[in-house]
Every structure is written in C-alpha cells, then in structure tokens.
Amino acid sequence: MPEHRFGEVRWLASVDSTNRYLLDEARAGAAEGLVVVADHQQAGRGRLGRSWEAPPGVNLLVSVLLRPTVPLGSRHLLSAVVALAAADACRVVAGIDPGVKWPNDLLAPDGRKLAGVLAEADAAGGSEGPAPVVVGIGINVGWPGTDDDLPAELVGRATSLSQWTADPVDRTLLLDRLLDALDPRVTALDSAAGRAAQADELRRRCVTIGSEVRVELAAESFCGVATGVTEEGHLSVHTSGGSRTVVAGDVVHLRPVAPGYPLSVDSGPAGASD
Image (cartoon, rainbow, N blue to C red; front, side, top):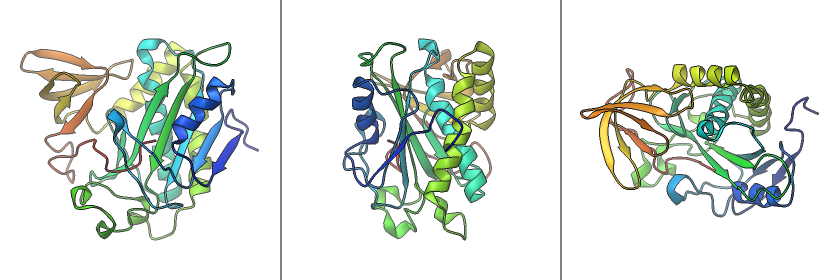
C-alpha cells in the first residue's frame, strides 16, 4: 500500500463524472485522500461545462478528494499541484515533459493538449473540518492514437502519450506515480513557504508566461502579454491599459511561447478535463 494520503483508490468501469462521484462521497463524509478512477465517463466535462468523450479504457480519468486548509485566495494552487504532479508522472513513465498552460492544461512539446484539470468545491462539505475540493484530471494516454481519431475541429490540437513513446503506457503505473508526486505537493500547501515553492515551480513550468494571450472572461475578453504567476497561482497579464490579474478564465495563446509551439493553442475541449 502507498505510504501517503491517497491510500483508497476506487477503479470504476463507468461513471457519469469522477468529480461528481467524489463530490457525492464528500457530502456523505468521505475523508481526504479518496481517489476514483474510471475507464469511461458518460458525462465528463471541462471548464465552462464543456463536454468531451474518449473510448473506454484508453485514457487516465481520475479525481482526488482534498479537504485543504489553503486560504481561499490561493485555491488555484490545488489544481496547479495536480497538474504539476501529472507532469512529473508523464516524465517518469512516458519520458515526456509537458508544459503547464494556465489555468488548467498540460501541453506536449509541440503545443498540443495532453491533459486537462478541473477543480470543484462544495461548501456544504458533509462533515466537520475543511470544506472539500475535488480535483479531476484526464490524461490522454492511448487516445487519440492518430489525428484520424479526432473530429476535424480537434485535429492538430490534441495528442496522447502513445504518440510520444514507442512503448505502451501503463495507466496504473501512471496513476501511482501521479499520486506519489501529488502527496508532498498537497502537504506543501499547508504552509506559506510551501505554497510559495509550488507557485514558483508553476512559474518555471508555465508555458503561458511570455506569450501574447487573449483572456476570455464571463463578461469580457482582453488581450495582452502574460508576464507571470502570482504567489496565489493567478495569471498576471500586461495590457495596453496596465497590468491585470486573472483569477479564473480561459486563455488563448496568440503567439508561440517557445520554438515549436503553434500560433494559437486554446483551452477548448481538446482532451480530458474531469
């Protein structure tokens, strides 16, 4: 058994949403650390209610239940540490080192989307102690195998680990390495110094920094240059009207952040998110 908080893993053949499943378990009093994995999601979703669907049994669809003591303003770091831990796992298991696209994606070296993260909180909680937060991540492991697997609107925007390694990727091993990497990162969020260290790593691995971006909010959109990530995990953007801090929103890369990245990589439904 693993020597960390994520000791109970429930692997389901099918579920509507791994996040929804864990939110229900949290309301029933489930403790921090419960993990649910599904071979197939009937109603998987990403940010802004976007839906997506992959064939059963090919990708890693996992959610973890946390009961954090993180200050409310730093809650974005919860999804950030899951993304960082997943990047660690991809590097160890598949030999690929993804970049983190703010706010919730992992990108392969060519800029295509490899994974997506979705965090959901429930103030009701269902038990004493900190309110639960469920963080889900979907990593494209075996699908898409080629661009022929994708609808036309996703061609060139989504990829999978299988496209980057000659050997099959074991989803169970990938999950184990993700949870191993995640546990100390969650522990770090209990202290101001630990949160600062995680934010600093997010800065180092965030491919959005330095890019011209379009930020799409519920009531407006604006363009600028992403200049950094705050201690709380929020995105700093320099615009013609001055500097703005983005707490939540969709971000479109309008210019490449590094050689090899395409001119436009957005955070649409190009991969798994929940």
